[in-house]
Length: 250
Ligand SMILES: Nc1ncnc2c1ncn2[C@@H]1O[C@H](COP(=O)(O)OP(=O)(O)OP(=O)(O)O)[C@@H](O)[C@H]1O
Image (cartoon, rainbow, N blue to C red; front, side):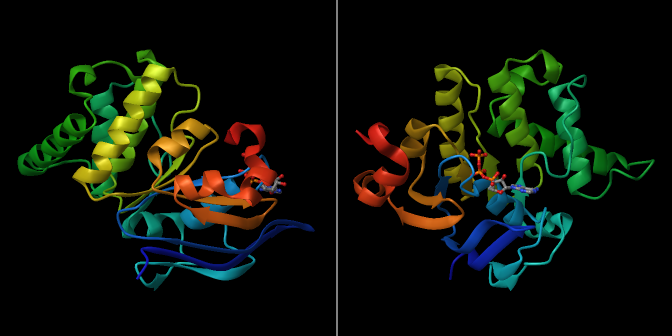
């Protein structure tokens, strides 16, 4: 049974059909890319999966439970986490403080005025685990706003991890990064995928990254499902080349 199962999903904005009859199944432990030209509907599909909007028609199941009309918060609790969903990143605070806030939000203790020593200790341990997993320990006490762009995006991933995701949704995880930062992010996502058996669904324009990181790729075009397959299958698919890859496919 698929971890995520999107069936016959359509989304209209007024007269505009942003998505029509989309099917998407993502298996536990997969790294899947969602690819397509501008306006293909990738962000809209992400919004439907993460709970920002409800679809006009169709259904979404997560781990066999229907979540079509669940709120963002309910979905986060069941393990669907998108960066920047619940906790905001505070650029004037340190990496450590940002993670502490995310961990406290996740454990539902952020609204309590007083924490027991045991609770504080548990929060500290969890923050240290997250710093370790994302290789941010050496930058724990730096202000997030002072970090390089690539490191700031890693902090976003660490904050998403604080929510204990089973399905991590990433919007263009390497947008604006240098080659070196991109390589670091790819390594990190691969490592987290293995270490936590994390299922990852990401939207990305960078073709190189998609082919390098994704195990399977789903292509949308003009609000419709166009193709799905391994990177090799997608690169060889004539419909995809015609609709999207063009000369980049070479
Ligand atoms: N909130 C909204 N209200 C009205 N129209 C919207 C809304 N969100 C998206 N659209 C429209 O839906 C269509 C699909 O947009 P979407 O942003 O999902 O595509 P995308 O594949 O993510 O594109 P891009 O790669 O440019 O980000 C577009 O025509 C867009 O203008």
